[in-house]
Amino acid sequence: MTIALNDITIRTTLQPGDIGYVVYLHGLLYKQEYDYQTQFEVYVAEGLCEFYHNYNEQRDRVWIAEHQNRIVGFLLLMNRGEAAQLRYFIIAPEYRGISLGKKMMECYYSFLLECGYSSSYLWTTNELPAAASLYRRLGFTLVEEKPSTAFGKPLIEQKYLLRLPLQL
Image (tube, rainbow, N blue to C red):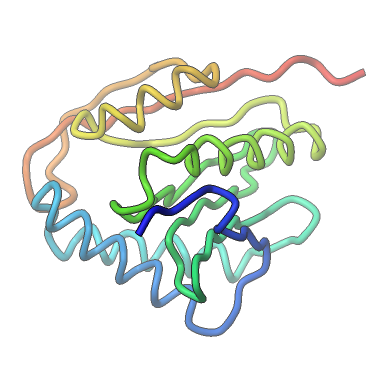
């Protein structure tokens, strides 16, 4: 079955089951693809709980990509004052390569501008070069690296920063 970008819908509201499914999807895929351990799944769960408890519809947003009533992509913008943090960006493997990630990042960028954020940042790891490439194409630059074992294995955490044009 060929999947086209137009077959996928993107919504911006959380529904019952979304948080648990996104935690599950991260735990499952990051174990399969990068051998991350349970610590990573807990990290995602704690961050999603923080997002939920501090949610402000004017400054925070989720983008949930669905195909045939199944979540196939997720991206979150968390308000951090003048900056916005990009978190939990994931695309199910069979939906990669159809520009879904690019479309979701365009939605993210539009909301950043709409809200008047001065910058955005994200943390990732050196093991995700395809994601880093997408971030760099959108103007993010690598600003920090640090060794870590936070996800149950040695790796390098990386911080990327996007400075936005001044809003007049």
